Image 1 (tube, protein in one colour):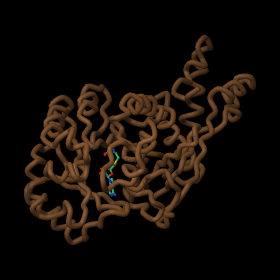
Image 2 (cartoon, rainbow, N blue to C red; image 1 turned 60 degrees about the horizontal axis):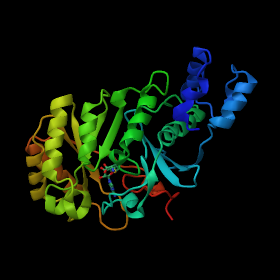
Image 3 (tube, rainbow, N blue to C red; image 1 turned 180 degrees about the vertical axis):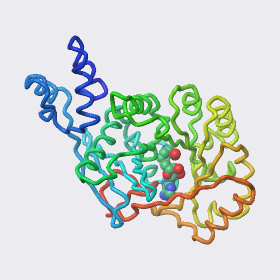
Image 4 (cartoon, protein in one colour; image 1 turned 60 degrees about the vertical axis):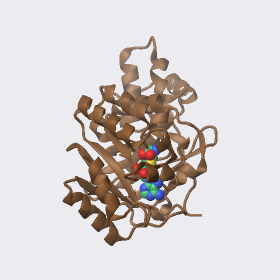
Length: 337
Ligand code: SAH
C-alpha cells in the first residue's frame, strides 16, 4: 500500500496510534517499522508488510559539497532523481520530481529529451523528501533540515496536478512532515489549467513560470508547449492568479548564448514583466548537449537592462553540474557518463 494511505491501516484503532505512526515516519524519519519501538510487535510486522518504508536510492555528492543527488529506483524499476541544494544562506532546498520523464520536450532540457514514462504517485513524491531528510539526519550536522521543497526536478508538475497537491498536503501537514506552505514552490512551463486551479487552492505555496523567451516565435521554438499556451494567455492567467492570491510570481529565464540573451530581448522581457509582484530569476544554462551558456559579462548586461527598466531580478546559483544534478540535467541516470 502507498504511504499516502497510511491512515487506512489504523481505522478502528485508538486515535493516538496513527499520530504515533506519522510521527515515527515524518519526524523521527524511521526507515523500518521495527524502529517504532513503542508499537506492539504484531503491528510493526503488519506495517512492514503493508507499508514498507525503505526507499532504494544511490547518493551522489558534488565536489563542493553543495549539491546531493539521490537516484531513486521505484518499485517498477523506473528511476527518478531528487536533488538537495545547500545554499550559503542556510536554506536546504530539495528539488523534487513530479513525473518519470516529461511530455513537454523543451529543447534545452535533458528530461525533455528522455521522453515521458509515467506520473509519480503521491508517496513517490513524499519518499523523495523522506529519503533526503533521512540522509541529512544521518550526517549528524547542525543544519540538517530540509527548509524548502521545489518542484523543479523531472516532469511537469501541473500535468500531474492532483498527486503533486496531495503530496504537498501531507508534507505540509503538522502531523506529517510539517513543512510550512510558503516553503513549497511549483515551477511550470505554463500549463494554464494548473495555474488556474492553484489560484483556488487554500495552500499558500509559491508559483514559478518557466518563461525563457520574450516572444512567441522564440518561445515556441524552445518550448513547443507555447503553441498551446501562448505568452499572452499565460501572462493573462498569471495576472488573474495574482488578483486572487496577492502572491508574488517568479519567472524563470535561462540564458543561452546567442539564442535568448540579447539586450534587445532583455528590453522585450522587461515589457512583459509589468507587475510589481513579478520577479525574474535568471538561470545560467547548464550543458545538456545542445546549446552554450551565455558569458558572465552578457548575463550581467542582460540583468542591467532589466534593472534599468525597474524589473525585480534575482540570479540563480547553479551547482551540482559535476554530478549532473543542475537545472535541466536530470534524466534518471547516475553521474556524468
Ligand atoms: N516542468 C517544470 C519544472 C521542471 S524545469 C517547468 O518547466 O518549470 C525547472 C527549471 O529548470 C525551469 O525553469 C527550466 O527552464 C530550467 N531548465 C531546464 N533546462 C535547463 C538547463 N539546461 N539549464 C538551466 N536551466 C534549465
